[in-house]
Amino acid sequence: DARVTQTPRDKVTEMGQEVTMRCQPILGHNTVFWYRQTMMQGLELLAYFRNRAPLDDSGMPKDRFSAEMPDATLATLKIQPSEPRDSAVYFCASGLGNQPQHFGDGTRLSIL
Amino acid sequence: GESVGLHLPTLSVQEGDNSIINCAYSNSASDYFIWYKQESGKGPQFIIDIRSNMDKRQGQRVTVLLNKTVKHLSLQIAATQPGDSAVYFCAENQGAQKLVFGQGTRLTINP
Image (cartoon, rainbow over all chains, first blue to last red; front, side, top):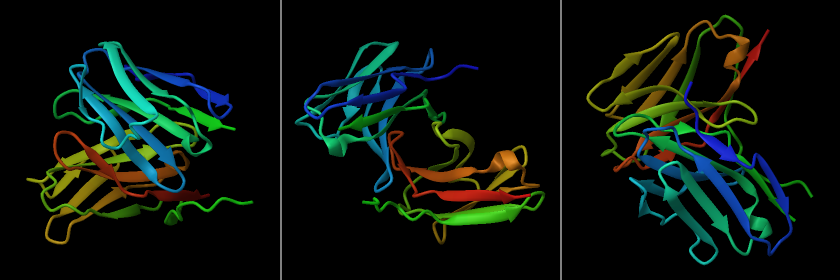
């Protein structure tokens, strides 16, 4: 079964540190999404790419968050500097055309 | 102190019974809807989808019903099994594959 792979699985760090989360989309998928899941807000779309170009990042705090796709097999989400309110589970999903998105198992981020 | 989070609607059913999970969506222009299942510690897993030109679609043990008049979506699970215990999310495509997720319903199976 093809899967979206996310690393690291868990990350605990101190406030102010840079955090980088990585995602390997399913081979052949041309759309990549970053979501954040919290108890308070549920699942929120942060940003997404099609054919490696950013299409929409309106859900992402611009001052500290950045999302990139250095190549078709890697998407990154960075937070610098991190804050305790960034603690959440971050999911990557990939898709192709009108087919449903497939999710990875997330990165559990805790900012102390 | 204890954090306050979303109060997820909860549905408890007996093993073997049918489950119906409901979802109201917001945008009458949404043309595509998906149901996802999320187990503890995992990402949302695709279950079934439906496009707005249909009102019913069936999969293996699952059926999705779409009522565009009242903007309502439901997921029916037949003969519920312990492995069906999870949080179920509906999502609507509001254009350009941009999904908006509902708050989720926690399904608990009683033996």
